[in-house]
Structure formats: structure tokens, C-alpha cells
Length: 244
Image (cartoon, rainbow, N blue to C red; front, side, top):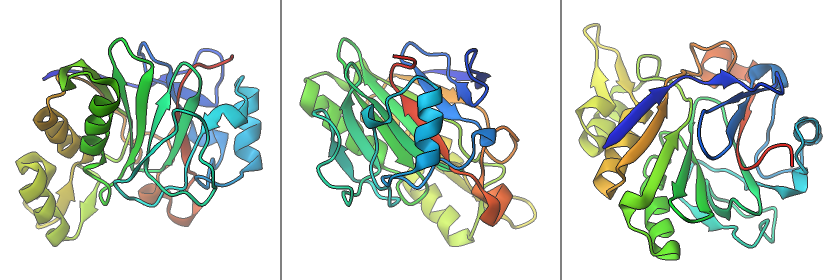
């Protein structure tokens, strides 16, 4: 797999956003933008921030997230019901933007060469594996091979910060490889969302991936549930044209 590792940069036109240097616009709200949740529900503050950034909030697709591996097909537009639940969206990036809320979990953007059909995912430890479902769905819809799909793995809690119960780390190690779950010399157990998803993408046949190095716990510009507890602020990761 061809992998590049990058750092988030401040959006040049708006201090409330950080962005990935990529062909497809992919931004994440900074911690200073305030809480951008809840997912899939009306949020006046989120709408204000989106409008300030040049978005029509009605054109930013979102769903109620439940830490699942469920996808929903939003190529035609917003879900029919606000009660629809999913953690991934298939959408037409030429017509819409899509957004997922995160605060240590990983936002993932999948795009297909020569196609406007894309997938935006919310992948936490419970939902690890959704990326495989999304690759399969994109292949089915577009007829493209897995090697035509590119992935951007957004900022998340890093493996050095994600301490978990030993049983969970062992489950990750068995399912996603030695780098995805381990125990340190002092007996603490950890999981690595990046390593797990990279393993899954490679097994699915994806050959191009960009990994954002920023850790939500370590980078004060980012919101983190693990770092901030009940005072945490959910970020919004948005893929799609800005300022239009």
C-alpha cells in the first residue's frame, strides 16, 4: 500500500477549521469552534458555524451516529427520517457535502478515481470494520476496483494514548493485527485505530491511503473525550466543496 503521513493545517480562510491537504476538500472543526453535535439532530450552533464558513447547512448531509458499522445511501440527498441511524454515508460529492461528529473516533473519507461517489465514515473502536463495508459498497455502486479507491484517515486518538481494558486490546490484536492491540512493559493495554483500519484497507485491496498524524488527545486544537471528559467538544469532519 502507498501511504503518506501528514499533519493538519489551519484553514487559510477560517480559524474555526483545520484541513487536510487533499484534492477533495476535507476539514475538521477546531476545538475553539465549540461543540458541533449532536449528530443527526438539529444544532443551531453547528448551523451558525457552517454558514460562517460558506455552507448551506441543508446541503451538509448527516445521520444519527451509534458507533455501528452501518452505512446509509444518501446519493439522492438527506435521509427521509431524522431517526435514521448509521455511521457511514455514501454520497455524491459533486452535489453535497457530508459531515460526521467525532471526539477521539476517526473520520474516514473514501473516494473513487473518476467518480463523484464517495463515503464519509465515523469509525471508533466499536465500529472498526465499517471501512470494509464502505469499500464493498463503493465497488458495488461504481463498478470500480478496490485499487481505484483512495482513503484519508483523519485525526483520532493515537495508539499511545488509547488505554483500554486488556480484553479489548487482545480482541483488537487478534482481529486486526499485532500493531492494533498490545500491552506495554507496565501492564497497560492499548489499541490503535489507525493500525486497525490500515490493515483492513490493505486486506480489502485499497492501495492508496493518507494518514493524518494528529492525535486528538495530544493536539490542543482538537476536541477529545478522553482528555476533556464531560467538558469535551464534538468536532465536525466535513468532506465536500467549501464556500459555495
